[in-house]
Image (spheres, rainbow, N blue to C red):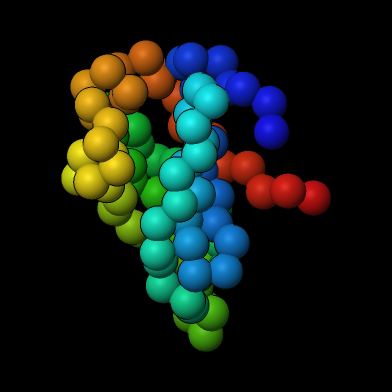
Length: 95
């Protein structure tokens, strides 16, 4: 995959994993097996995401919250250094 511009990141999911790509990095972490897909990013606040997601067997989309800071710390990233350049997060799924 190509490197993303430093001010952008991409959120998606595949199977039981959420995928967050920024710069040259791709991190994956477990999510609900009922998650079908993320549909929108409502808010990005330096590692904290408010998103909408579609889940199997639920008629409407649900608001979800993702805190990337503890995930990045567990992967030995400096969250401030990694996340400060990101101004926009978008949803992107492979076609």
